[in-house]
Image (tube, rainbow, N blue to C red; front, side, top):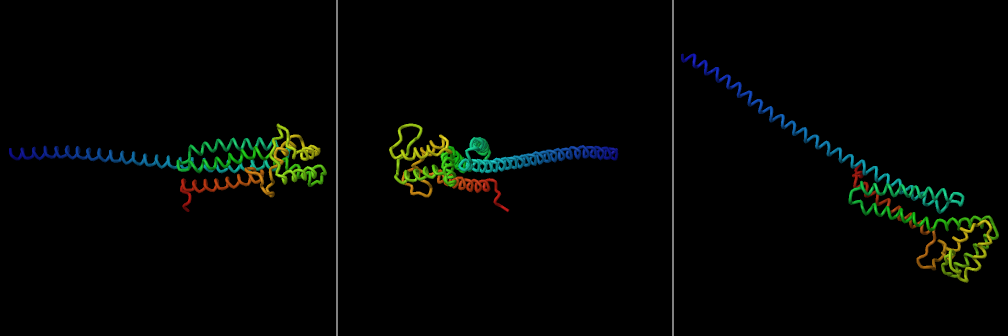
Length: 262
C-alpha cells in the first residue's frame, strides 16, 4: 500500500513538475519575445531617425548648392547688361529677369531648408544679389550708351569726338546733375546738348541717358560730387559684396553640413 502511494506521489510530482516547467518556459519565452519586440522597435526608431537626418542633410545640401548656382548665374547675366550691345539689349534684359526670378525662388527654398544659424548668412547673400540687380537696372543702360559713344569716337566719328570733348569739359566744370526728362537744363549743358544731338548714330534714348548722367565723373576722374558713383565703380562694388557673401555662405554651409572633415 505504501509502495503504491509512493509511486502515485512520484507520478503526481512528475506531472506537476512537467506542468511547472512548461509554465516557466512559456513565461521565459514570453519575456524573451517582448524583449525581442522592443529591440526591434528600438532598431526601427533608430533607423527612422538616421533616415530622417540623412534626408534633411540631402535636402539642405541640394538647396544650398542650388542657391550658390542660382546666385552665380544671376550675377553673370546681370553683369552682361553693362556690356551688351543695343541689338541684344531686350534679349539680355529678359535673361536677367529669368535668372533673378529663379534666384528668388531658390533663395526662399534655401531659407526654409537651412538651419536657423544660417539665417544671417542667407540674408547677406540675398542683399548682395538684389543690390547688384537693382544697380544694373538703373546704371547699365547709361553704361551701354557711354560705350556706344566711345565706340563711335574710336571710329574717329567727328561728331562723337566733339560730344566726348563737350562731356569732359562739363564734368571738369563741376556742373550739377540734370534730369533730361523734365525741367529746363542748366546753362552749362547747352554745348553738350547740341553736341550729343549732332551724333547721328546715337538714338534719342541714348542721348537722354548721356545727358542725365553727363555730370557723373568717370572712374578715372576725380569724384567732385558727393554720393555719385560711376556705373563701373558701382558694379565693381556689387561684385565685391557678392564675392564676400558667397565666401561666407560656403563656410557656413560646410559647418552646418559637417563637410569640412576629410
